[in-house]
Length: 312
Picture: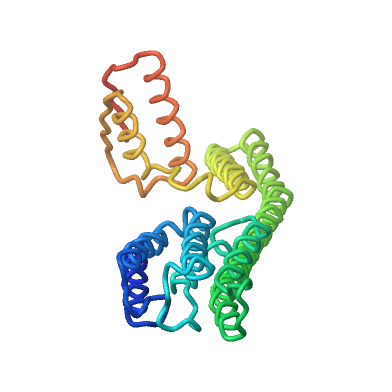
């Protein structure tokens, strides 16, 4: 894109010069054609205005100064329209570069100021030339300052919006964590306590009951209560940790564990008997942890050995 823009300005300045809108003489000689070629080379430096904006301004300023001195006081060239601005139109785009691509604003102002003085030909003052020169070299910096301020404002607003969104997410996560902690505390303090009393009473009844049917029913009640306590403890543990830590930790994630083990060099095979969905969440998570630890031990103590995982 920069090359196309530079080529466009080369054609524009060449056409404008030959059309009499700049310094072109009525009877051009060899020097005029040489300077026209030099002007094309100078304007083509616009292709580097992003990487070296100060150098581009220096090149165009040097050409403008050279053409001005050749016209006056050297008299080597006599323009057909002496009241024209002799600087190429590429100076408009060149003045834009330092304020948008250069971080040092002092250097930018100094470079554009020197170019403005050269384009305005203050040593041969003309109100028309000075006015056009100032407008030509001021348009680019004004646009650059506007776009720079707009870019900074958009970046600041985007950063503020992202920060606000992140803060809302953190607040929501904190609220969820607080609610989970509150639920875990209530379950631990109330439900677990009541179930523990039921288990103790059932255990006492299974010992003190006189008939066999009562003792057997009490023992079954105690066993069911113990299982409920295990599940409650596991559920409380889940509530007290982040939900991300337990995603996939169930019997349904065993295939992923086996695949990961095979991928790192320990070939493993999974055989499942029965329906995993019938197992309680506690059993599923326990199986997941046991299989994960077993695969880790196999990789550690028998690297490369084939592992068979059988779940029933």
